[in-house]
Length: 382
Ligand code: GDP
Image (cartoon, rainbow, N blue to C red; front, side):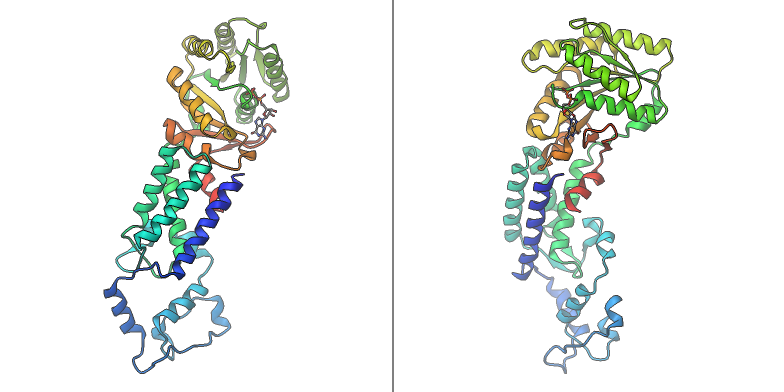
C-alpha cells in the first residue's frame, strides 16, 4: 500500500541527512559561543576522544560537565546522537516540540531544492495540485527561520516537518461513522454514489456487515435498476452478509425502489437503509438527474461517494461532479490495498472538503478501515 510514494518520501528524507553533512545548519552565533564556553576546556587543544563505558551505551551519555575530562561540544553532540534512545522519535511527535530559542537553523536555498523535489514526488503520486501547494507551504512554514534543538538530526527535523504538514492537510475533516450512526433517527438512510467498477456494491456490503456487527438491522435497496447484473450481484452480497434486500425488476424507477426500502425499514423498525445507485458513465447527465431524484425522494441522512483510489485525480473529479449535484457528505476510497501512489487518499478530502470515512483494502467483507490522519501517516512514514 502506497509503496511508491512511501519509498520516494524515504529517499527524500535520506537526502535531507546528506544536506546535514554539507553544513546546512546555521547555528545562532550567540548560542554557539555560550555553549562552547561551558563545554570546551581551554587547556585542551584537541578534542579528547573518550571511551564510552559499555554500561553507558544503553543509557544516556552523561552531560559533559559531569565527565572527568572535558570534550568538545561537537564530540559531545555526536555521542549523544549515537546513544539516542529509540523512544525519542516518538516523543518528537510535533514539529513545534523541536523548535526553540536556540539551535540549528536550516538555510533556505538547499531547503528550496528539497521542496522542489518533494513537489515533483507528490505530483507524480497524483496528489491534487492545491494539496501539493498546501503541503509544501506547510513544510516551509515548519522549517524556515525556525531553530531546532541540536539533539535532532536534520533528517528528523525535515521528516517531522513533512509529517506535520501532511497531517494538517488530512485533518481538515475526520468523521466517526459508528458514532454518527448511533445518533441518527431510525431508520437512517444512506445513499451510495459512484462510477461503476469502483467497488460500490462491495463497499455497501461491507458497510452492511459493519452495521450488523454493531447490532444494527439493515436493509439494502437495489436502486441500480439499469443493469440486471447489478441487482443480482447485490442480492448475492446481501445473502452472504445476511441482510434484507429490497429490489424490483430491471428498469424499474430507482426512486421507487428506494421509497419501498425505506417504507419496509419503517414498518419493520430497521435501523439502516443502504441505497445502491447506478454509476454508468456513458449517460452521465441522465445519471445525475437520477441521483437527484433518488436523493429528493429518500432524503438520505448521509450521501457517500465511493471512489477508486487507483483513479487518482479522476476520483476527485468524479467526487466533485456528485458533490455539485447532490452534495456528498463523506467519501469511501476503495482498492487502497493495490494503490501504490496514495494521491487520492492524500488529497480527496482536502479538495472536496468532505471527510474520508473509510478506506477499503481488500475484497473480503471485513476489509474496511476507518480512515484518519494517523492511519495514513503511519502507512506513509512507518
Ligand atoms: P461496482 O461496479 O462499483 O459496484 O464495483 P464492485 O463492487 O462490483 O467491485 C468491482 C471489483 O472490485 C470487484 O472485483 C471487487 O471484488 C473489487 N474490489 C472492490 N473493493 C476492493 C478493494 O478494496 N480492494 C480490491 N483489491 N478489490 C476491490
